Amino acid sequence: MKLVFFSETDDPAPWREALRTALPGIDFRVWPDVGDPADVRYTLVWKPPAGWHRRFPALRAILSLGAGVDALLEDPDLPAGVPITRMVDAGMGRQMAEYAAHGVMHFHRRMPEYAALQREGRWQPLECPAATEFPVGVLGLGVLGAQAAQMLVAMGYPVNAWTRTPRTLPGVTCYAGDAGRAAFLAGSRVLVNFLPLTPDTRGLIDRSLLAGLPRGAYLVNLARGGHVVEDDLLAALDDGQLAGAMLDVFGSEPLPVGHRFWRHPRVIVTPHIAAVTMAEGAADQVIENLKRLEAGDTPRGLVDRSRGY
Ligand code: NDP
Ligand code: OXD
Image (cartoon, rainbow, N blue to C red; front, side, top):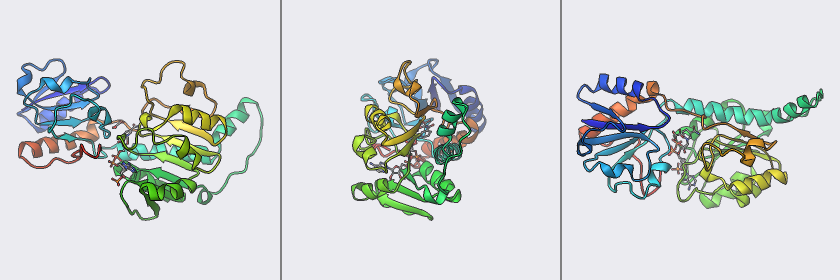
C-alpha cells in the first residue's frame, strides 16, 4: 500500500514512524520521492498545489492533514469520485476552544484598552460587564465549534450558535439558516467563527452581517480568511461598529507585508496557529481510516463534496 505525504508545513517524520509501526505493509513516501506514481493508493496532504493529484491514476482516497478541506475542494483538477477524509478533532478541539476562550475573555475583560492605557502610562480602571452579560455567538457548531461553545458555557457566558441545519446543544441557544441569522447576530457581543469555507460561506462576514451585530461588538476569526470581506471588516472597525478583531486566518497567508491588519490598532493577528494537527493526536485516525479503506469500509470524516465540508 503506497501513500504519499505532502505538506510544506508539517514534519513527515512522526507520521512515517506512526504509520510504519501500525501498518507494516505501508510504503510511506514523502513528495517528491514517489517512485512510480501509478502505484500510489493514498495521499496524506495539506495544501498540495492545484492539479497535483492528477498524477496518481490509481488513487483510492485523499486524506487531509487538516480539518478544513476548502483548499482541496477549490482545486478544479481534483480527481472526481475519489473519497476525501478530513481530521475530526484529532486534538484540535481543545486548542480551538482555548483560542476562542482567550479571544472572548480578552475582549470581555477589555485587555486591548488596558494595553493602550499602559502605553500612555495611565492607571485607569474600566467598567466591565459580568460574563453573564456578555453573550457570545458561535458561527458553526460542528466538531470544533461545539467544544468551544461548551467551554464558553462552562465559563459562564451566554452562548448562541448558528448552523446550516437545526442543532441542539445543552446550554446553547441555537439558531439555523437565514431565518435564524438576524436574532443570532443581534444577541452576540462577540462573534466567534468556526464555519468551514464553502461556496455558501465565502464572504459571509461582510458589511451586512457585521451591521447586524450590536454596535461595538468584536470578532474572533479562527476558521478561514475567505469568510471575511476584509475591506468591510476594516470599515466596521474604523467606524466603530466593531470594537476589535482577533484574526488567526487570512485570505492570503502568510498575511502580506504591509497589509493594514498588521498595524491596525484594534486588530490582533496570529499566524494560523489556533490549532495545529499533531501526529501524536491524529495519526491513529489516519491509521484507522487506512484500515477501513483497505477493508472497503466507510472512513471517518468523509467529506460531502456537494456540501463542501
Ligand atoms: P464541521 O464540519 O464539524 O462543522 C461545521 C459547522 O458549520 C456545522 O455546524 C455546520 O452546520 C456549519 N455550517 C456549514 N455551512 C454552513 C452554512 N452555510 N451556514 C451555517 N452554518 C454552516 O467542522 P469543524 O468544526 O471540524 O471545523 C470547522 C472549521 O475550522 C474547518 O473547516 C476549518 O476551516 C477551521 N479550522 C481552523 C483551524 C485553525 O488553526 N485556524 C484549525 C482547524 C480547523 P450543520 O451542523 O448544520 O452541518
Ligand atoms: C485545519 C487548519 O483546517 O489547520 O486543520 O486550518
